[in-house]
Amino acid sequence: MEIRQVAVPTETLAPVGSTNAYVVGREDAVLVDPAARTDELDRVVENRDVSHVLVTHAHPDHVGAFAHYAEVCNATVWARAGREHRFEDATGVVADSTFCDGTEIGGLDVMETPGHAPDHVALAADGAMLTGDVVVSSGSVVVGDDEGDVRAYLTSLRRLYARNPDRLYPGHGPVIENPRAEIERLLAHRLDREATILAAVRAGATTLDEVLDAAYDKDLSGVRDLARRTAAAHLDKLAVESKVDWDGERVRPTEEA
Ligand SMILES: [Zn+2]
Image (cartoon, rainbow, N blue to C red; front, top):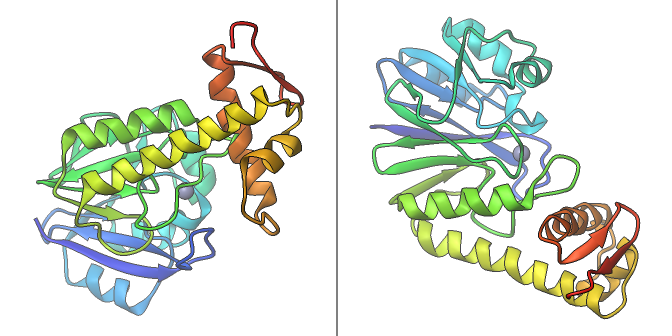
């Protein structure tokens, strides 16, 4: 199955300053994450019979030209079942059809991969997978407490690992040729971060800022807000697991800890 990656300029947190749109197949083709309009994406779309259009998740840096391409391709607009309102708010387009885990769209299989965003999906194309913002080729993925869910994210990474795809086509940055090594790196990064945060709480940090100061050795200027959301998402997980008591303001270790 032919997978065409087109990087389009977006305002995104990722270091690359672009989002990857994908067109998969030639007949009954699927357009994924048309985040901005470019001449190149126009050409790729014109040279194929695009029948379906969807996003991996409805974040602003993935939806910018969705309405435009849905219109010019006259394609079936797909949204995640149960998340239609979120989808419509983000894209300004009403879905024609909905998908869930296992739905087949133009030869792609949908796999639900929540964590970075609650509506996030990956798409399997033969042995390859389009992974949106679940796996990135450098740095780490944002899983913040506004809508991120660390437990769901770890489960999504493990499901991707078990599926053992031979290549990943991420939402930002170049194609990933060594999926399992990259997924292992992201899992290790999350678990390391969690361990340092739990250690900070056990050492007496009681507020988010104290946790940040104890758990991060790098200079956080410019990214402190992001780090706060990340740490809060980890504390949410540790609280569910009864390792800390955390009310959103103050945290302390649980008794048996
Ligand atoms: Zn995102």
